[in-house]
Length: 328
Image (cartoon, rainbow, N blue to C red; front, top):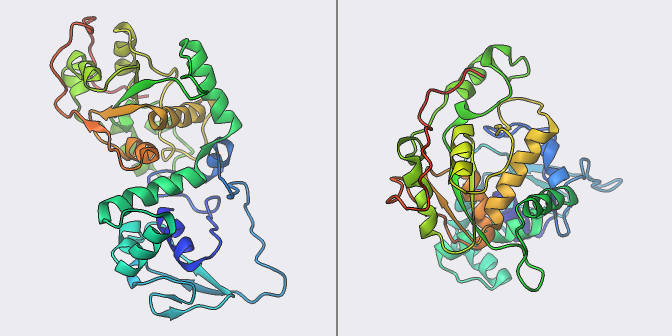
């Protein structure tokens, strides 16, 4: 998506994203949910069919972002007219880093947004600007966040801002999730192999080997309420026993099935938005779920605690997060 966003800016064309017809590798049918939870500034996630214009002949050009410079009249050496519709397909190594390798592309985007021209800053700024324009919370997502804050008596800062809180993410694996039943019973899965993969995947984590030491990493994240976002029920229960906030419900992976209960999708989207909204964030395991959420903070990467932290006296209630994953 960010690659298509960058190319639309460089070629001065409208951005159309075909989310509804194309499942995303590893993410499932996200397009069927995203319009319920996000709004764009000048971008409509609900526009399933964009009108090109009556009587206009459209010439489609499939682009590879590695092909060089993009501007209003040319795309990697291909001449463009007003009727040219550019196509960038997902899953074809079409990452924005390919676009940004071209110095002319980088200079134009930097000038458009008055960015620092260094490679690291333009990369972070490109993702932040895409987030800022395309991923503002909808009424539904705002209401879910407001209900969570009210439930835990978390008051916003003076001037109307959201509450101050820090977040720690523990990604223990798809096999920890309720997604949505046992592998053998998931008739809506893409394939049996996919079902088995989602049912069995487990990840090493400090949350498994030393859960209290893992929770102690909150001490490194600064002031504010403390929130653990995790895909593990045991890790969530451990957090609650030790006075750490969590969201309710069982986690799911949106790539593991074609349909889910609304409460499952609500949890995924709320978890992601809370990670995006936290004043500071840390991770025990690294995941794209957290990395994409933190794009909102203009390149401030989450702190990484792969080995956990020294135990704190604030967390003393014993926990066991190491047991073998459930069958369903």
